[in-house]
Amino acid sequence: MSKAPIQKFADYVSILAVLFDGFYALYTAGALGAYPDEWLPENGNHFVFALMFSISVVVIACPCALGLATPTAVMVATGVGANNGVLIKGGESLERAQMVKYVIFDKTGTLTQGKATVTVAKVFAGMDRGEFLKLVASAEASSEHPLAKAILQYARHFHFFDGSSLTNGSQNDVNELKSGWLYDASDFSAIPGRGV
Image (tube, rainbow, N blue to C red; front, side):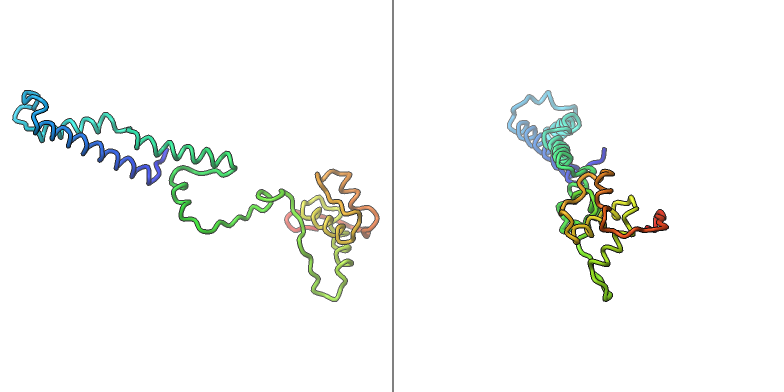
């Protein structure tokens, strides 16, 4: 329901264009005698006649081609954006987008694969990284959290157990990930918002 600034400008320009074109055509035609003087209003002249008709044209024909072209372009642009997964909130947002230089996303799962993965694990103590990952994976093995599954997959891949990873997160895959190479964790509890 709101108009983009460029649409307001287009409406303004189109109205002025129709106004001046109509005025100029009628005034010139009257000055050249293209229509009879009895068409003129009482105590009026060609200037007043042309001005009245140009105002009438503006009032009646305001939604002209240029005035309709801008909202149509905005509608098409938002439709194309929606087809490509980008939701645009009206023409003003679309017009402001031309000034954007950088876009920063924090919706990693939405923009990538939709599941968490571990990319790098560093140990800052003298402990072996493989042993560290085995301990961390053993602690996370009983958790159902997506980050726990990601840690478990990374530790498994690090230890080179068959190289496959969870594809759909089914219960069989989770049990298979836990088989044999992890320590048994006793007294496990997951606290919502705090982890294991």
